[in-house]
Image (cartoon, rainbow, N blue to C red; front, side):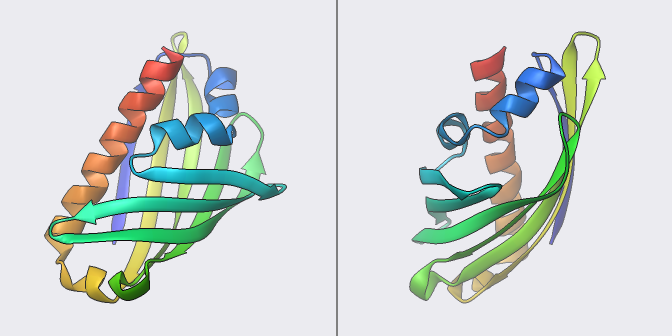
Length: 145
């Protein structure tokens, strides 16, 4: 599955960059995030509780930041295991640019799912991903704007 989008964040690019590298702030913005902690440079352990349709699961996994261009871009790679619900893995390229005193954040992501999660259906998963991204960026904008 591939997803992309762009969001205008009402804060300067450096503030957005710092927020995107702050585990506590990110945890507050990610829907369902129960834990996000830095385990070593550019690597995080994460726990998310998600409900997609009738399927509810807690995913434990890791996130790694790669291809970092400070205050401009990075690639986020992640994977998570949700027990009987299945697994998720994917990556997202995040690029920041100045936008008249604010920041334009563009992202392009791809992911894979397996197990019971895969049986939920592509449309439901895509709708869930879009809704989750919208909520994340709304929360981020609220915290920074």
